[in-house]
Image (tube, rainbow over all chains, first blue to last red; front, side, top):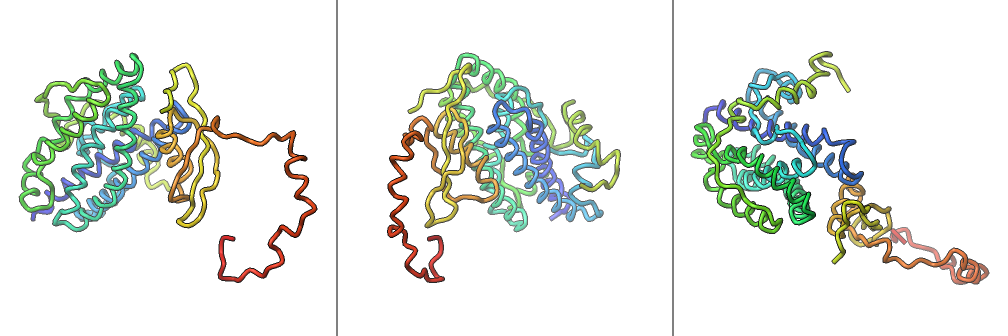
Length: 251
Length: 100
C-alpha cells in the first residue's frame, strides 16, 4: 500500500475532528444554558481527543518528525483536509446542532465500518471514537427534533440551517481516488455503500423533526483535498495564534 | 410526558441521583435545569459524570419531591435522640464488609 494514501486519509479524519472540536470549543462560555455549555464542551473534548490519536498516527506515517501539535498548529489552511462542512461557522445554536447532527450521522457510519479496517491502528481508533459518536448523535439528534418540532421560530431557523448546510453534505460521500484505492485494500470503507444508511437515518430524523429534506445537490466541495471556504483561514488564525506567536510555548 | 418549556419560561429544575458503581445505591448529587426528563439525563451525564463518577443516573422533577417541614423537625426527629439502643454500634463489623 502506498503510505501517502493512508496518510492523506488519516489526516482527513483527524482534521475533520480537530476543526469541528475547535468550532464547538468556541461555544464555551456562550451556550444558551450552563448545562449546554458543558455539553458542547464535552463534545469538543471528544473531538480533540480523536484528533490527537489520528494526527499522532498521521505524524508517524509521514515520518518527518511532526507530532500532533505541529500538524494542528503549524499548517496553513490549504494543508488541512477536513470536510468543508466541519469548518462552517457556528451561527446560532440551531445551526451548530444541524452541522453536528449531519457529521455525527456520517461518523457513525464511517467509524462503524472502519472497525473492520485492515489497518489495525485505524480500526482501534475507530472503535474508541464510535462509542463517543453514539452519544454525540443522541445529543445532536435529540436537539434537532426538539428544535424542528418546537416553536414556529425554532422550526424556521433550523430548516434554514439545513437548507444552508445541505450543499456541503455532497462531499461526505463523494469518494476520490485516495478513498477508492484504500477501499480496494480494505483499509477504508466504500462510501457509496455507507451513503444509503446515512441517508435513511437522516431522512427518518428529519421526518420526526417535521423538517423538510432539501433536494439532492451536486455541489462538490473539496475540503478534504485542501480547498476550503473562507471560514477556515479565519478560524485557524485564532486557533494557531499562540503557537505561531510563541513557538514551542507550553501550557 | 412533561410539557415543553416555552421560550420565555425557564426550564424546570430536576434533582439528580448517581449510582457510583454497581451494587451501591443512587445518591443525590445536585440539581440542574432541563426541558424534560430525557434532556435532564443528558445534562446530568455532562455535568455530573465527566470524571467517571457513575454507572447509572436517575432524575426527578424537583417539584415532584415531597419534603418534610423544617418547622416540624422537633416532632419528627427529636423523639429518636434518647434511643441509642437503636444504633447498631454494639456489633463488631468484620473488615471484609465494605460500604456499610
